[in-house]
Image (cartoon, helix red, strand yellow):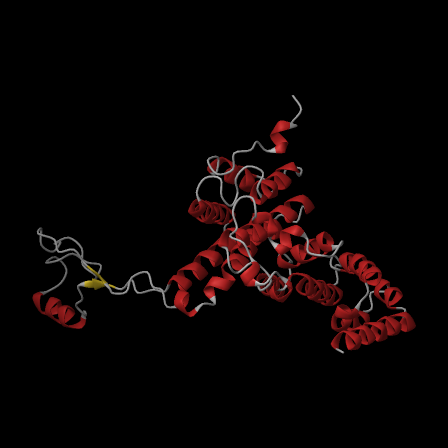
Length: 340
């Protein structure tokens, strides 16, 4: 009964698209047509969806943000229909992800759609879009579709979308790409109450007592002890200053991560270093030959980025390759086939 209803709904949507000639309307940059497609893309047939994906991919590069925004929303909607967790393999059927099975990521395998690569390329442009509202919405939507059960799988998915594809498309601003990578990678973790409760320290850090006694040179009053202040003024100062023997380090890890990501948005060198350390940490948890060993998905993502002509992102995959020689034991294709 449900299948029959779904088939009837799909047929009705297809008929409607034929009547209004949806593809022609999209080619005319019709914003209204984009909104129609967004709310009806689940009922598309394969051939029609292929045409629409190709048209929408071009509109995602439109210089007019009024066209680009709804086009990106359509691309994100198709991406969610393809890769949302409800379409993935049930948890009880999932195998433990090792070097041989890591490629079973629904996103990395392309799902059941022959145009999956084109859709992924569209959302990759979205997460690095110059318009902050488009970028934020796309990052949030993409992050919700990524692997939430294995951090190494999620890392490769984020690296592919935020680093590898932009490197090949020359949409390769280091700070923008790395901030997209980090935000998508940690979104699921940061939404967990247990992570939000984590602090740098559960109690203030006590100041080490010094046997040398207080310094007689400098004071918080920016003057010298016993030189410019009278005895009376020093007594007043002493009353006003709150005395404490502890340093407050009870800052949440989430606040620290937010600050670091924000700092990386403004400093390309910080973005590069932060991304490198995150990749090393996640891959290092698996040990040699796991989650990125010879021929693994991370190695392929790095190879694809290095195969592209040099750009702003080129140093990052090179640094990752160098840092993970013990985990990724293959030689980059860009090195193997480099002309002498």
